[in-house]
Length: 144
Image 1: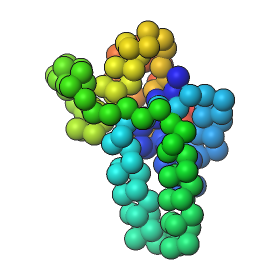
Image 2: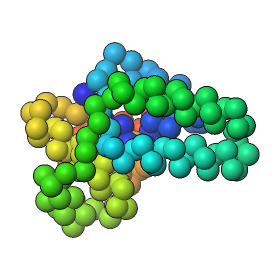
Image 3: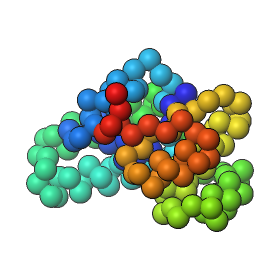
């Protein structure tokens, strides 16, 4: 099982460093992510449009592609069982709120399924926290 945070998943839709690798990482894998990813990724797309990095037509295309893919992902809700995990990791790691949700979701998934979960993100601080929580951490920018 692969857990993608927003910083990794956005690379599938917007060309940036690590985009080629994210496609490889995702191939033939079950992909999980938090429901939080939906508003985060749409916001990232719109920021890229407003910055002039992508055209309006490209924005529409990548939103359509993302929404088509969304139904193929295992979507994890933010639920009560995450709260103690969030509390624990925020006491141990200096993470932003959204990052604590992503990491907690991956940890909950690992514990619930009782199987390894690879945590994929582009944020070094988040990847370090995931590694210290015994998740296989993958940065698509340096993936080989």
